[in-house]
Length: 337
Ligand SMILES: [Zn+2]
Ligand SMILES: [Zn+2]
Image (tube, protein in one colour):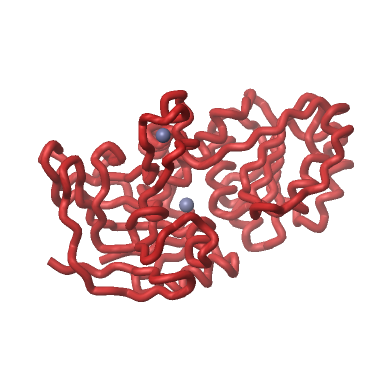
């Protein structure tokens, strides 16, 4: 049987292909993809700045329905709505055996290093598949992967009840992390961005207030002691250097945005010393997908369809990449089939 799939033949050259549907090998399931999100990593894959091999069908944030299973997998899965943790790990290296599988020496990911969800069907290992409530909208299911990244970040950063947070960068990841923070104890979050449209969305989605990036100095007067937690969700080195000024003594600074490799940021070590600032970072998902499913299934306070502002058919992949580059809306997803 045939299916449609996006194929990235080489950096910046993608076509929509009509190709053979994958078969489920032993231990695998075939998922009919209903929604698949695009993120900053997909821009890197598109541009050839990632570890991906080509040709590749990208798509690592996906949800859908199981249509068939390979040997060793229960047929009870067929017809279930599922989300897929894209993380592929070896299970045998020192990091996999130290509960640090996001640092696996043989790390890979569905849609990054093997074919992913920008297709009508995808073959995935059964151990990467999680059941979702049947009534969960597929677009919410496809948001669980980014939520799992945010969940891992907040396992690392201590957030106390009543914490005052400040976040730079209100893109889709920033907004998801913001909503998790507000759900997980922060009493208020001030949102900073260069885009008035994104600031407006951030406030609609829960931010206590918004500050345009060019007026950020006004926060010094309003918060002379700084914030308990400051988050960079921009990945821009200049912002990362500036944001640390707003951490209160004894506070935490989370580098959540992904800076370009090799970029330097000028940070004053005396400031870190004098304010006793703790710097945190987090990388991708570390066995946090199951908890993200729980969060998504128990309430719409973190994930909800409003976070997805643009959807495209598979044929709109290149257009969707352009929309992300332009910083349009919030989460952008493809809808195969
Ligand atoms: Zn992603
Ligand atoms: Zn490993």
